[in-house]
Length: 155
Ligand SMILES: [Zn+2]
Ligand SMILES: [Zn+2]
Figure (cartoon, rainbow, N blue to C red):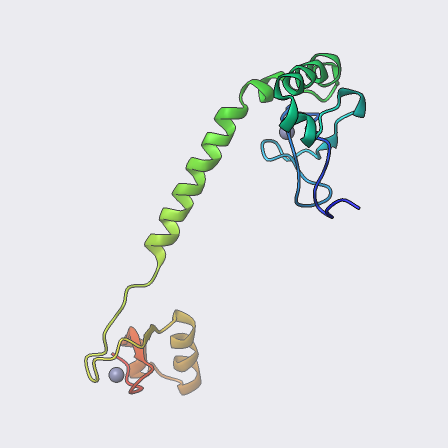
């Protein structure tokens, strides 16, 4: 028995032509275009052991697979194939941008002016509206921004 999640054969994407070993889960989608990856035909012998033992033959077989199979598929998109590096790079840049946005949205640490605890939270707009409706008038809380979980005061 082989290890449960280790694939012996390389997988390829029929749409963008990207090839790589998938070792983690079934029905893996292509990291470039999201199309479902397929196991390479066994006659090309694109196996992990081939890769480790005879890398040159491995790459020759990969080229052969591309020339004989992938490039002839109707779904194959030559533009996607040629842009694979750019697409990956753009995705990484987008990821960095998203991380930076997340970082900037992180709430600042606010100190309670009464007890100087930093165990504070922002009073949400919803809870302010809730208070106003409940009391039938605008409670003083509506003008307060922060609540101290330590001493219970709003400020
Ligand atoms: Zn793809
Ligand atoms: Zn406090």
